[in-house]
Image (tube, rainbow, N blue to C red):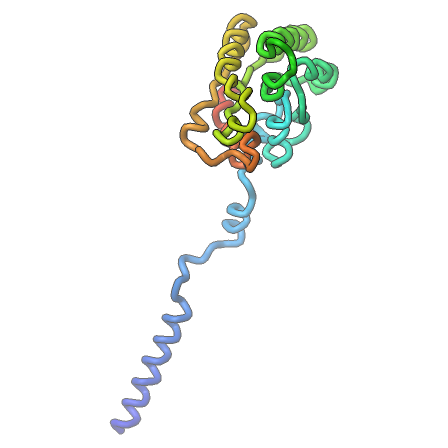
Length: 219
């Protein structure tokens, strides 16, 4: 009788041990809905908030649609774009008829082969703003500064040292033209690793950070 009791007790202990091993490392079960929500990037909110906006700019701006943070309809940009070249996009911009226009240009302007690239660019920038005002008088315009590059990129291309001075010119231009200007420096202060491998462009995670700063501009 005692042997039967001991055998029954051992079987119970083994069963409990197996159950414990089976549950080891497992937390609360997630529903399929929860798993889907975690898997879907949080871009739908940005696409909704900026659905009546267009971002006009260069290859850095183009990252918004490249990384699918915004739809292509909300981004009008391309590699090598300068303020002067962006004037060619005004007709397309007018067709899209946005309520808000964000301009992110200048990374190529400061490299322009002329005696005074800053002054030349700002003259073209002012012309760009005036043309947008003429074509889309009801649209709100916001200028964004040239984004910083890494120390390695600056060492490779010393003209990037002029970014801060150029951005000061953009800020003054925005005040003169009576359009918006949003400083993006807080992004880089708190997120030092958002640059892509070339030290100029950005990883996907940069763009939601930028849009978070710009939400208030479209309310």
